[in-house]
Amino acid sequence: MWVTDSTPVECGRSRPTVKRSDLAGWSGYGYCASHSRFFWGLRLHLVCTPAGLPIAWSLATAKTDERHVLTAALEEDPNLLASRPGQLIIADKGYVSAELDRWLAERGARLLRPSYRNRTPHPGEHLLKPVRQLIESVNETLKGQLDLELHGGRSIEGVGARIAQRLLAMTAAIWHNRATGQPLTRSLIAYDH
Image (cartoon, rainbow, N blue to C red):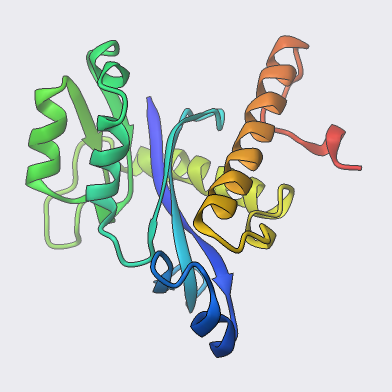
């Protein structure tokens, strides 16, 4: 099972910064519903295990459709889904699409997400909420302990490198915690000096 979601990566706050930034062709204005605010920047789209181990990630403009980004991220490595028949991906309502469902089914994967209010709920849908909280927790670890929003990148290459550093640091911590038998594999508290 994998979980997927996107999170804002702010790249500037002032209007002068937006006008003179090298990220102007990449970044854009978007809305973050979980924080009830607009931002100027990119979105980090992340597919990870429930333990927080990144499987695939992608940076996209703030307004790019999450469904298209998920498809592109999974197409980057054709063996990613081909080697895992029956892969279950859990997402939020933003990934509702018959086309995406068809695309994943052709590759032997399935997307599970909450139903809209006017649709009949899937059996076991009430169990999705705790699992969906896992990806929110991973995003919060990236933002809180690994300072994702304070990346300091001034070009698309710089932002990409700094986000990759944070994902690699989280991956290394998860691997180390698992290898040493720690009870919480995604906990970075021991490394937070």
